[in-house]
Length: 251
Image (cartoon, rainbow, N blue to C red; front, side, top):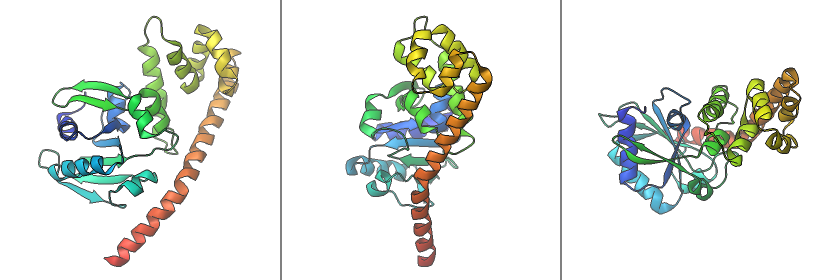
């Protein structure tokens, strides 16, 4: 369960009618794949009206802007994150990270249409990144994200309905991160597996029951995705360094 201080922050964002989607560790908690996180990550619609509502919420939260860049539509739409430390006495130490564009994910409008909702005590209905979009957002260069991707898929499969829809089966076959789960999926859903195999080498080996080659294919897949994320962030990191340098000179 999400701790009450986090719920307090989410309730303020909701009361301010901010169009935002919970993601990151708090979303993973709601999907049953994590146990604890003190940070709050949100994807937000980068319109001026929505950002003005966010600024009002940040004032209420006594938020301090940390790092660079400063909050604004232009930097958010370029793919940067804006970071805040909350100093409201009830929320001291919680960090809020805001993004509008995530590598590999579709536009905010599409993410919003696919969103999931959870009812949380003290926060009401909270809009959350849909599970497939959360998994996509977690495919980064960071070591800590890949176990979470695996866990999110495994929990969803474990909690499956008696007759899962094809779209959910396709999701598992596209995103499962272990040979054991992929082989089981191919055994349960051979027709769907054959369709996915055309675009995923690991599924081809899973259909054959070859655990060794399936694991090697999964490793190659992960390395390619990590490298793609590094390339995506390289120009953004260079831009951040320029801003930090300029800020340091100004101070």
